[in-house]
Length: 309
Image (cartoon, rainbow, N blue to C red; front, side, top):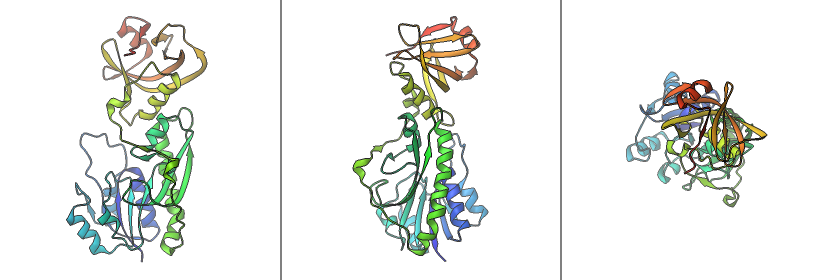
């Protein structure tokens, strides 16, 4: 029987671990993370799934420490898999499996190598992304590709909605690749890294809206960091306004001389730096959800300038 050690977390980790177990792979160890009490946990538990199937689970702070490497080595795995595990596996771990170490990455490599690829793809206005199964090497997300699956990014999709699609794509890629991996017939296609770029992680502060930009760019930021991520925000009336969902209004222009937030009837709108309009669908003001009419009441006006510095 094919043996594997899995480093995994998040929904992709859950679905891909389920594929291995369902495909008859002997998963001898799962390495995952302790949930961060300061993080909103909106995704499935890899540890819970592993324990349900009586697979041993460990949660080291550093996966490359000697004790972890020695334990994996003693298991003599055919494969090591990384499914949305948040830390890089070092060369000692990558050298252990007899038939290779593979990762499932949430983009169409070589595009969007690195951190939070789904969020970056939405923020940068891409029309598609996907999942890629590839061999791991020391350089992040740079090894030979086994298979990929594309998914569409619709104009108003949030990063959370796209991530749900990528999770299904990851499951599909691993499911159809697993027989070839086990048989030793899976393809390997080298990446041309000149065709892609590497992206770093994002912090909550990166969600601050630059209203000087075009409406499309603001809309993409709102979509790219919408809940369950920290959200896009600005300061209005001396308080924080989080824009949780927006809708692009192509072909419609504002009437103000500068970026402005305004309420018209029961709807709230933002005029951006290019004069383009967004309808602000879901808003949170000073820590609480708020309607357009209530926001106008709090601000004492139906139109207020937006910050541009």
